[in-house]
Length: 194
Image (cartoon, rainbow, N blue to C red; front, side):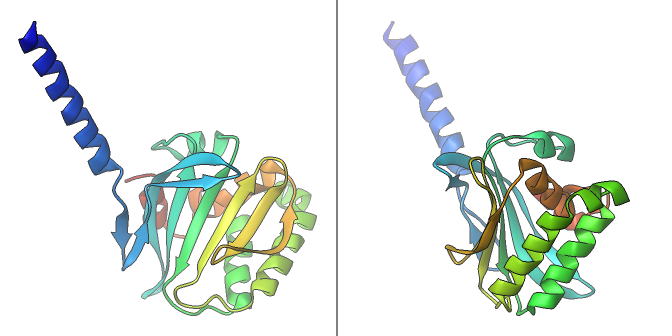
């Protein structure tokens, strides 16, 4: 009987050790990404992370936080509830370049009709990004979905601009990185946990 209890305790200890190892922050390009986050009071898990590279320049580190981790984009895009795309800038990027890249990502991953249907939300997103101004090296820019409100942008923990309604719009924003024509294929692979 005591032998069984010892085996169970040993198995439990190994399980906790495995959880502790998987719950460690990861670090990319000197940016530490925590294994969990909270959005709208809901616990989220880091699904994956990667570095956005444009030409030869490393632009930012991105991490995707979701309620349930998954290895494929379709499953992640279908999730409901609070979610976060966290971006930590590795260099300064002016507001026009940043919003232009996001605009291009939205356009590349939607049909003309889908893109047109999001026009007012895309305009609001552009206005929010202009309100942010230059994204400076070290800034943490979060795109968060709040179920009762919509898509919110925070910079270094401070909300910026207006909250943009529609869960479908947040999913559209995620397609910038997870869509069929992602901004960066290597980054998409990282966000999928690969």
